[in-house]
Image 1: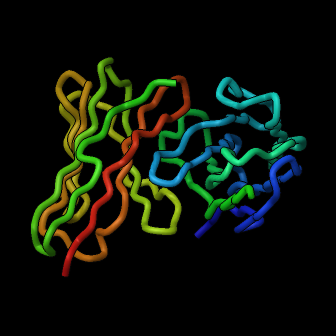
Image 2 (image 1 turned 90 degrees about the horizontal axis):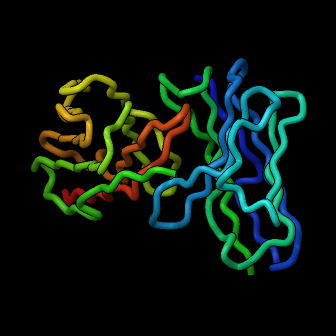
Length: 115
Length: 109
C-alpha cells in the first residue's frame, strides 16, 4: 500500500536553532498538507499545496515557519528559529485532488522536541 | 479555521460495551470525515459523509450525518481492544479539513 514518507521520525533541537522536516507524498497526489498536532489535541492545518503552489498558508506563523514544494512533488517545512512552544508532531498528508474526497493519507509524522 | 466540537473528550469502556462519539457544529457542514489515530500513530481515514441524514456502516462501526448537517456521530458496537485510540471528526471547508479535538477511547479487556 502506498505511503506518505516523512523524515526524520524524531528531532530534538535547542530553541533558536533551525529545523526542517521533509515529506514525500503518494505518487500522483497533487494536494499536500502540513499539519501540526500538539499532544492531546487534534491536527491543526498549517499549509496546503496544490502541485507546487501554496493554496492556503493563512494558519502558518510566517515569521518563523516556511514551506515549499518546489517541483510539486516532495515538500519541506522549516522553522527558524525554533521556540519551546513548537514542540509537537508535524504531520504531512496528501490526497489525489483538492477537497480530499477520498480522505487524506497521513505520514507517520516528525516528533519535534525543542529544549 | 472552522472547528467542530467533539464529545466526550475521553471514554473508558469494558470490552464488549458500545461506544459513541459526537461531533457538533454551529454551522451547516458541507461534508465531514472521520479518522482514527492509534496511540503513537498517525490519523487514518475511516469515512466521509456528505448527504443529509446519511448512515454508513463499516463492520462494527456506524457513522451518521445529521439531518440538518450540523452534527455527526460514530458508534462502535461491542468494542474490542483493537478499537483503542483517538477518533477525530474533520470538517470540510474550501477543499481543506479542520479537525476536532478528538475522543480518546480506552477499552478494558
